[in-house]
Image (tube, rainbow, N blue to C red; front, side):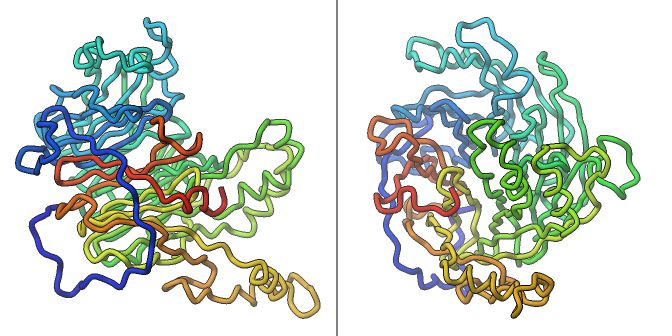
Length: 491
């Protein structure tokens, strides 16, 4: 990820379809550099990645200044610089979601649980930082933010640069890290006294591991982790997998997803649908529960090959039938562990709009929109095109056969969607609906993410902003065009 190399002559700028431009809302600059609007990379440290807090109007940004910087998403002002724990650049950051041992233990402050931030560095270590969230609710400027954060744990074990860190959303006591040393480590917080243990070291990648991402979907198989890297592959990992010969707690690779023609830089799982209003209503609708469980999991990946691809897991018919039978009872499967292999197929390739490496992608939990950014300095937003009602009816008729018999379903797959590139015929189409070229001037954009909008100008209570992090040392906040708000699919 550098900004000096020119675009490859073999990759001319593609013909980008028409789209609405993003609107610039704010530029966030780490407090360690001058706040002048004329800042350039010569006076600003490179910023690698940003992560919004799960519930608070806070944004953490990893920086080449060996620090992590915190910003307010209400005022867009710098709040603090977290430093002193690493000897080299901080490459990645991640907030622990509510539910971890540290975030559920009452603190001495009036506000309750503390904030926990993980930082991954080029010095091959992962830092765990903690502070009381009671002190950040109101962003009291009289508080010495630098002293409010405690460097509580230093996780060591990797042999080279840390590339990505991620807490598990289903069990926030679990933390995944990956490194240039070709390995993925899984750690578990075993007590509220900042004790972490190594759960697994997964060393099957054949090159640098660039990214890790936990599946956010609740599943009877337990936790699921995906990783991607320099070997052009995505690997899917699960715990207690049948066929590995290990005991309880053993992790193993259940899928190797191939298709990219270059390094896999980013992974984003499709968010699950919103939860049911109440356990009672969910229990009363067992069929709906089964449908949610059997909905095919999807993940998006991006790569050096300048593409964004979507993959979906094919669930065996036997698993679908078993889940449907006990959907209403909500009984967990405690007899059969997950199998040692999973089938993943390419759903589609999104419109080819980047002409250099795509470094990061983000899948919105609220709208289902996808965003991408990369070495060409561009950021794009994609929307899934829902199949037409006629197409759905036609597909159902073909599945039932001439006499309405479901037995011919497998022999008559859905007709391929002509807007899908290299899909197996079962995927949906996507279109570019918003974007911006040279969003950080001539500099590369290293990361993109969605965040809830907290400032007074928000147009709806659940509006999201898009946040890009670049080589120019700036973090930029963007808003979607009015006509794009709330137009995603399946949310």
